[in-house]
Image 1: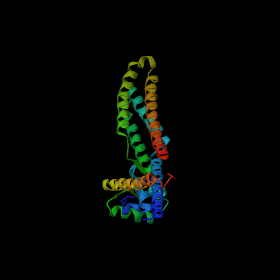
Image 2 (image 1 turned 180 degrees about the horizontal axis):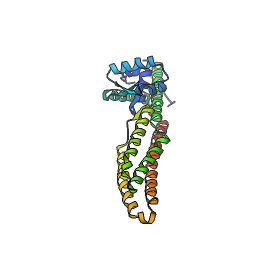
Image 3 (image 1 turned 60 degrees about the horizontal axis):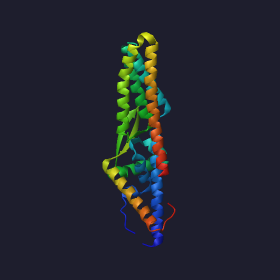
Length: 105
Length: 153
């Protein structure tokens, strides 16, 4: 089987889910992301920060009715890295199918 | 790498792909505009035409302010904004709406005598409202179809 290259930043399940949620969107509010991932604020913040440090996600703050809201979006390098990661996952699954060792897909 | 390791890796990859699909689906569900949004926009667009036909253009500013408020409220409450607005569909919607707006005003003014000073603006407003509502339903259906297509993939 050929070796596929995964993005170590995106590979963690929560960060992968964050990227997957943001992929079809222009941006998403922190609250919507937290609800979708079903994680606490601190866990989400930690993962967003790691993605932001890698240059994959950018954050924007806005104030509505005196309350601060945070919006997150994938950057262009983030989109490219996510697409590459998904392609690597697909190629792994596809090669397993081709090798005949996997019939569940 | 043993075949057991490979099998585990493949299972994990498949799990990750399922998780990606599920999150993309959740994101698209968040992005579907609510029904009230389509209704509100269609009523306001209809009101805009009706006011123009009735020569009450000074009230346009109220409709524009209300439209802005509706758009702002929707974008704030949705919590997400969709990325892929199909440019073809947006262009098509504009190509239908803009000429239709002026066409309805001209037609209603032309048939004003036959339809009456109340009937003509009302009819023109109702026609545009119906078109805008149909477009909003089409957008909702498009997103739902996109989600369904993802489920079947």
